[in-house]
Image (spheres, rainbow, N blue to C red):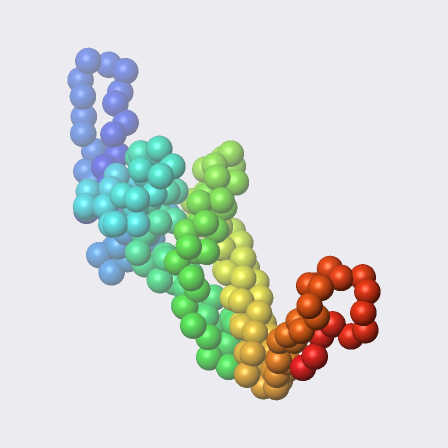
Length: 183
């Protein structure tokens, strides 16, 4: 992966500047934050990034590539699980994929209008809002499951009564006579 400075002088002579130095230990996400708007993604896109570009009809957006990178998605899931475990005191499951996708798409749509001067701070705000939303959804899912488990298994269910039989010769709509139903 290389990040090139492509400033073209106005004169007829074109001089190419060497690639910007990027630490090899800090790959995709951090190098794009260092480079700012000059980010050039040389590697193949991940499945998340390809899907996001198709779903949002956006291509070549460095913020989209950062947000939907596999490392960022894994970071969001791990952080949300850790937050839920800290709050509830019990280990938590991974968030539902549909909830994660819905939250990512809606939050990205909200962040589309924000200027992209500093990708690092924008990514931090984005991740914070995603983790907050995931934690809220995961806690509410856990509370709903606890309520369901309590109602279904811990509280004894009422036993239904036998169905009464109609023994009146006039039928169920008869206005005369004594007691039409006998058990």
